[in-house]
Length: 486
Ligand code: NAD
Image 1 (spheres, rainbow, N blue to C red):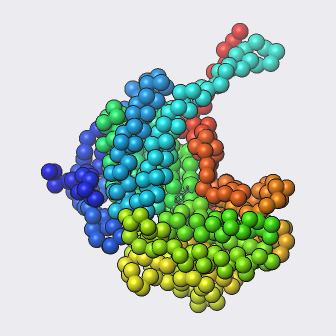
Image 2: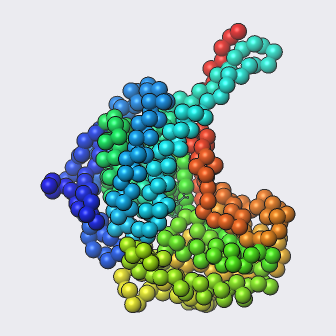
Image 3: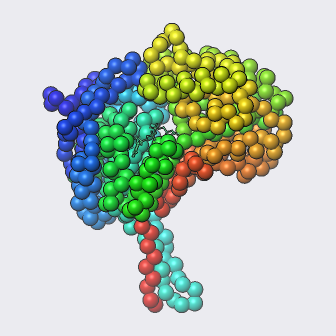
């Protein structure tokens, strides 16, 4: 077996880049550590500007032929990619779990099937729904034809919390639209991107259409964002990184799509179905709270606050924390030592500032390692760091309100605007409040449900642009209007 192959959870993963249809090695590597036990799982090739240049050049060279295929031909190849993902769900699930510590059962049942859908749904959309009938210029007899031309080379940079899902959500529409792609996966969870390259190759995606450059944000991400030969930049990650990337991309006037952090609210009104509201609250500990859409701030009507809080604490206490490969586990470890210390720091400062823990409040001392206990805090001041900053871990706060206006004001009192969830039994209130909330996605009496054809993105600091359905193609194409004389 090649020295570049790591065997992770019984699956062979190539640790090199994938550039122009070939595996490419770098002079140096970095160590990929599993959060489950903080043990090294692979030495990953560390890309730099050299590999980025090669990948962008390969993507550029492959672009004309890929763009020239009919939409039907491209879509058929992408459906073969979806088939390939479905055939390897178990491998992908096992490797992702080992790599970023998220639950194996979630990968098997939800995440990896969704990865396949990200290829199938956008291939279908491109083939059957993209394009408009010709329009006529009123009174002139000219015909206008609007076409969606591929933009060129798309750079995609992704975070570690759901690396393959978030990458495929961008790669699917970008390729379906006729672009070629350079992906820079997260250094804390780089493995499934390499398996995706294998699957693409086997499905018949031509050399150079999809490229992967592994590496850190600074060494591989930065040169990609500043590259003069990329035509789109799709970034999912944190607000501070987005600020840095914006500057790098500005010189080349590259259109950006940003999906960033959040500090989303869960509003619980006095007329809510309390069983549902409690379930929605406890669901926020999924993926150890490392979910951008997580409702971190629970804003509850004072008349039901005691009962709601008591029940949420009781139910959250029953969550099983442990190894993510165990079917019984509900909450796993945080992704890395550095991230663990950041989360612990937020909670320590919140407690020092007067917040009170009703559950958790620190590391799980029995499990040790990177296991941080589900934490519910009350009595934090409205302007405290714990109430205003994104805390990307299993930490939520509970506060109260008296009137609907106050609830909406508190929900909107954030510089983020990714999502908002409300629990109410009153349909009029549901309409009224959902209209007033400033967020890219509002869930009423539900959470985390979304069709791939619906728009997704964030308001405020939570992002730039929307993707999903036609909104993805708006971003990944150069929309052209050709006017034909009568
Ligand atoms: P991050 O910003 O630290 O890193 C994201 C990616 O950017 C990584 O691949 C990293 O290597 C790369 N990067 C870092 N510095 C770079 C630079 N200077 N130039 C180019 N690339 C660089 O974010 P993270 O910690 O990996 O992810 C967590 C964040 O992602 C949270 O804020 C979370 O809310 C957000 N997120 C958002 C969504 C969404 O859809 N809105 C989804 C998942 C995660």
